Image: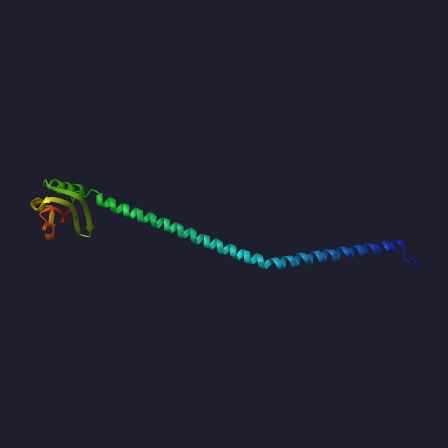
Length: 178
């Protein structure tokens, strides 16, 4: 069969053909990209939601750690403040060191002091003396010497501490205005 179309018409048809091929290819590419974007969207939203959840959790953990560090720091500061307050100089009351020195100076020969402790519970202030006495008489003398001190209001020495005649381990509770 012979070609009946003139050359100019052939060129126009050929250009339209290429244009249609280009349009179909571009539409195919557009729809392919559109389908790819639509199929990736759920994964993207899930990832974003997980990211936000992790960031919130991270903030909560950071706040928790900060609060815990502050709490520990506050506890340490409070304890240190209490200890400093206990050791601080008070014009109305004698120093704890002076009270311990009075107790140690009243100690007769034959009595050894193993420990001194101080408890301050509201208005009740108590010094506890733990030690050992060679003889019952030395322990009794120590108690009487402590009772002579005007700073001490009450000296409590349990009767059970006098049960032995020698090598007596004792605990004396001293209350007072200190």
